Amino acid sequence: MPLDHYVTLGRSGLRVSPFCLGAMTFGEDWGWGATPEDSARIIDTYLDRGGNFIDTANIYTKGHSEAILGDYFASGPGRGRRDRVVIATKFMGNLFPGDPNAGGAHRKNIHASLDESLRRLRTDYVDLLWMHWHDPHTPIEETMRTLDDLVRGGKVRYIGFSDTPAWLCATAQSEAIFRNWSPLVALQIEYSLAERTVEHELLPMARHLGLGVTPWSPLKGGILTGKYRRGQEIAQPEGRGSTEWVGKVLDDRLLDLVEVLVAVADEAGMTPAQAALAWVQGRDGVASTIIGARTMEQLDANLAALDFTLDDTHRARLDEASAPPPHFPNAFLPYMASPSQGGTTINGCESSVWHMSPQSDDERW
Image (cartoon, rainbow, N blue to C red; front, side, top):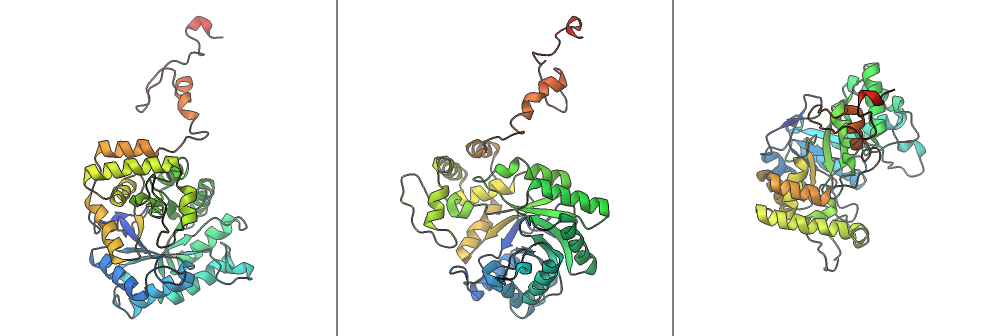
């Protein structure tokens, strides 16, 4: 699928590229990342190849990420192209330590955070505004009403949630539908071969409620590039990773998965990273996968994943190697087909007669 074969985002008419350009690496303010000049070259390449979806946040590189995007579209190489691009940013992060109202999903902060983001982005609207994560201190109806006000006022075109429990997303969406407020159109979550627990609740919820899924960290911080293998010493990774973090998550299950990924990628003529990206982009419900790039080489390699597809055999091997452990009630419900269906087949779901059911009319009370 080429980068300019657009998809609609969730239950909306907004057209976005199948790969979204993540801007978390724009700016060196966290001690790593791309310079403003390199960031501009990365944006240039992404847009020139047909990409139109860029994702940032108010707290990325202390606000510098948004400022780099703002300079690029207002006075830099992208001048005049802003309205042709879908720019997404986020609120929640506190940039003013000591001020309890400078973060969160309450009305005061959402307005203040968005105004600051618009100033840095040098634009008068954002196409998609995300709640970056769940705020346990603010009623969800306050958040949703505020977001609806911003959409109606023209500062925001669409809204979405990131890193929020499924039950709260469902509550928020139901409240919006009931109140005739602007609905959520997208869900941003960590999703990859190495992180599939979202398939238990978040992905089914998103499909049911019409939320387009935009996975972040599809390469699990570089682990799914294949650079960490069993028996090899873990070297200090470049970028936002750390030896301590990699050593903590790189358990036997993940190392086994990497071996399968490397083998599948080799058979399919891809790099492990390209195979991992092709896998996640092909998952049901996924609209646009967020790819990061600190260098042009990383961007080129990631975009090349769109040139590949995994066949059913390769996909099945990756599915089996990465399958998440079941949890309740998902692990329990498949056993309930027999007690409820009585040995019939419904919508392709087969069942046998439950051994504890009446086996004849004489046994029924």
